[in-house]
Length: 538
Image: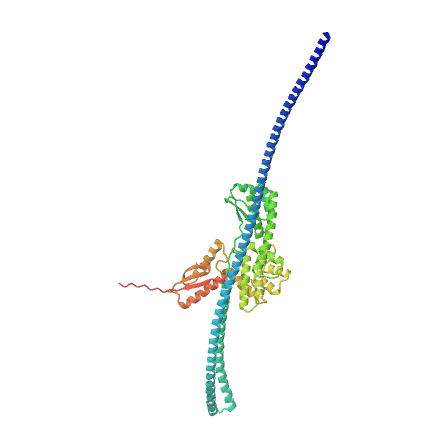
């Protein structure tokens, strides 16, 4: 029984152990499954978190990429628009040049038509003159034959009278008769020579006037160009302090870098630049304008901007000279001469741009020379270069004709051009016909109405001087300067001045004006004498 009880106990223990193992395994399995479920849940949460992070990062990258793409597209669009604008401006410039050439061709065609009409009228006049000369020759032949008969008859009568009265020999009588005939013929020849001389002088004056008028009509261009400003506008007077700088360091640095005087006074909204050299004044004006726009004004920035403007202005000068030579059709021009011509873009004379004046003078010289049967290309070159010395007269001593001639001689210009450049103000004798042509074209370009302007003070003084000279003559009641000082109307007292004295007074006024005044072109003196009688019928 005891054995059975022990066996039962053993079996129960085994069963209990087996049950414990099963329960432990089940618990372990359950625990393992619970741990797996929790791990899977954590992994799923982590995966979702990583997915959301990746998605947010992808959204950020996508947005940044879109922003970069938009910025790049905007830059490309801006560059494309700028390129299109440049091309549009170039096309406008080309179109403007073509239109200008078309206008020039139209003017030339009109001038050719006028010239053809003029030649036709001259041909008709020549034919009429030939007919008149032929009729005159026939009349002269008749007169000569009649004269011969009269002379022979008179000779025979005189011979008989002389032989009868004086008892002269036949040879002495012939000598006296021939002497009388020679005196008569010489008198008639002198009259014919005088008529022909007066007619030739009248025709020469008429032809010279027509040539000059044709030259002016065939070349019409703008008379003045923009004047180089020396007053720089500022946004507010506070900028004057920044221009001056602390203890004046900015203004000293600017004057040292540009070579101009900066005047900062109480004038509101303006800073004035003063310099005799127009190129330096232009560099200073553009540099100061850029500094004012930028706002950063200090010595280092001033030197940087001035150096940049010097390069830009120099490149601009070279372009101006090259374009002017091409527009004036001047070939084989040395680059240094072309550069000096470009400097004339910044030079003014009484408000007239010297580069435009040189271009105009060149074509006027060509037209006049071709009308006279000379080489138009040589005349155009002489006219184009005649004022080149004005680009250097601030740096070299002497007058601009001599300076320009010496400069052109260094670069191989011909003697014809050198004489025209040096002698266009009559400083040296003219050795070629092109020099007086340049003198005439220069006067035409400078004296035509609107080409040049004077200061108000000098203009008023010139008008007052004109009126004073006219009223200072005896018998003059009033004098009025009109047409911008190019004409003076003089009214005389009809009671004390007769018609013959009017001519004398007008000539004396013109003589005094020429001697006492300096003026471009010519001044017309118009003298009026009016006798007015008033009666009343009652």
